[in-house]
Image (tube, rainbow, N blue to C red):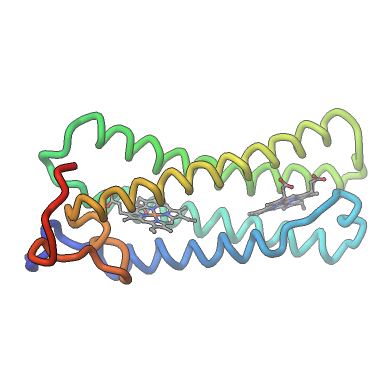
Length: 177
Ligand code: HEM
Ligand code: HEM
């Protein structure tokens, strides 16, 4: 179905998956642990493990849904480099988020089986921390790219973001970027 937008907006399902997952991610960050000793509380350990599995399932479902429907709203005449960069950042975000949960599951699995410290635990904690920090950088880059598209008024922002819509071209001179 064509609209008067420059590019066809993402579907309601795609927007729900995108913004719904942002809430899941923020919720996960609010319940982050400060130190491994907190896992001594067995019910907390169990909750963390269950949450990490749910997080992975939702992430995977979203990935499959987007890949099999419409991974990007970028139009066909987008330069190859831009298309490639967007694809790399999108896939890296999926990989980084999955790694947070998988390394969390490894930490929990080690703790559960009595390996509460040592080289393996240190390595899992390091991977967990690197994955978390990488996700921050990738998401920051992603948001900067989204803002760049909003400035270009090419419709990509409007295709996914329901608020603070791109100003129409009549509202001002179109920047030459
Ligand atoms: C946890 C935070 C976020 C993650 C993990 C994320 C991830 C993604 C991914 C993977 C895509 C590609 C489509 C898909 O597979 O769903 C996408 C598309 C998009 N995201 Fe985000 N996003 C996040 C937050 C945001 C925010 C805060 C904004 C804007 C302020 C934004 C703007 C967009 C836009 C405009 C698209 C469409 C790009 C296109 O059609 O090529 N995202 N996002
Ligand atoms: C999707 C699921 C998860 C998310 C989003 C997440 C997120 C985080 C974040 C943001 C931190 C702080 C990292 C930092 O200080 O730089 C953290 C630390 C930690 N997480 Fe997770 N986590 C998840 C799953 C798990 C699971 C399943 C476990 C174990 C059962 C776990 C155990 C820990 C521990 C022990 C720390 C403290 C590490 C330290 O001592 O520095 N996490 N997590």
